[in-house]
Image (cartoon, rainbow, N blue to C red; front, side):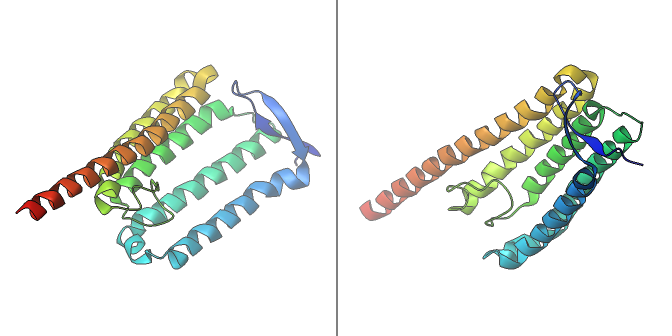
Length: 199
């Protein structure tokens, strides 16, 4: 039912600007989904802090399910478009990405320190308190990013900006925040050590 060359990429305005052969286009997303599913299954097995992952494993598993459902939705959008039902990605992607970003916030709320999942900077990985404080504020920012992304449905020509700009801000802010908090905690720790020495 699919044409020999299928639409596979859309620009920010929801117009097709990329094509690929049918065989590749039909099977590319399922292959990517399978590869990601295998990677997500392996991560808890190889992480040196795997015990911490088990503490929030149900949230991690739900996150995996959401990503795979999102990729399935992308696949369905491609199939529908190329079989005569042109649903604009600017209608579907903002909602899908918004849900993913929002649940990323939920995952951040519950994530314990590990090497693969969460806001992993040199400073969060070095200190549990920095990890917890960074993920607490990161959870709020990613949830807000998710809500803003969904509103992109109502401004389809600018939908990509609703999806990308808030999450970029959240990512940059949390990296800077983790550094500032680490410096603050280390400074407080040194001051405490000096006071103990004086006593």
